[in-house]
Length: 95
Image 1 (cartoon, rainbow, N blue to C red):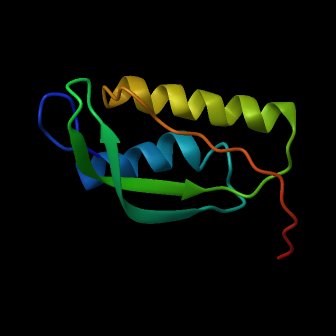
Image 2: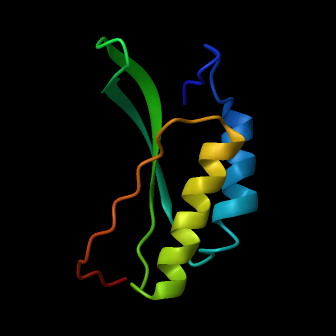
C-alpha cells in the first residue's frame, strides 16, 4: 500500500480498483485481507508496509489466469508499484 513517492494508496482508491477491475472479472466472490508486508529495498534495508491480499477461488482456466495477470499489471501501473505478487495454487474448495 506504500508508493515510491512516500505516499500510500488510499483505502478509497483501493476500493475503487477492487470495484472497477477485480469484481467485474470475478463476480462470484473474493476475500480481501489486510496484511503487513516486508521486502528488501535496493539499498539493502528491510522495508515494512501495509498490504492487501485478495483471495480469489476460481477454476484454473487460461482465461482466469489471464484476468489475474491483467489485474496484477493494472494495479502495478495505477499505483506505481515495483512488485505486485500473484500466487497461483491448485486446491480443492467446496462452497
